[in-house]
Image 1: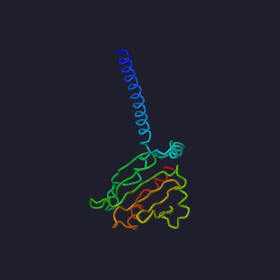
Image 2: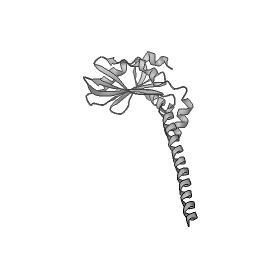
Image 3: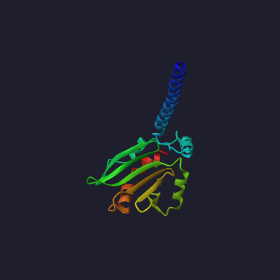
Image 4: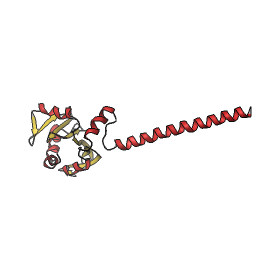
Length: 176
């Protein structure tokens, strides 16, 4: 009886150790995956394939920072996200967040670049589109999208275009 109890206990201990080590290595793999994903990779398998193909060619987010001044007239710009292929900032007026501005490298999403071929508007020679009722975006050098999205109903399309016009589009074009 003692032998059976000892074997049973040994079996439980060995099984527990094996299961724990398998679980731990899966957790470690998730940590590694999340570290690799932090710099802009899409977590879907299709996104991984696409993003991986262009990963070395995408512009680093910090390189976009020079395109946006810290202040644009009455608007203050506060960076909120920076990763491979994009930056995002909040546009504030008198302490209230009124919009977000995003600069994104669309190299890995040609379907988004293609949307600009039907544009009938432009800003400083770059095609411009409405993105829903609260967004306005331009495409610079057939690669970089600069989009301003209203967070407040008082921040109009004219306001979005004003913010877009203050982005250093020449500097952005040189990143191509």
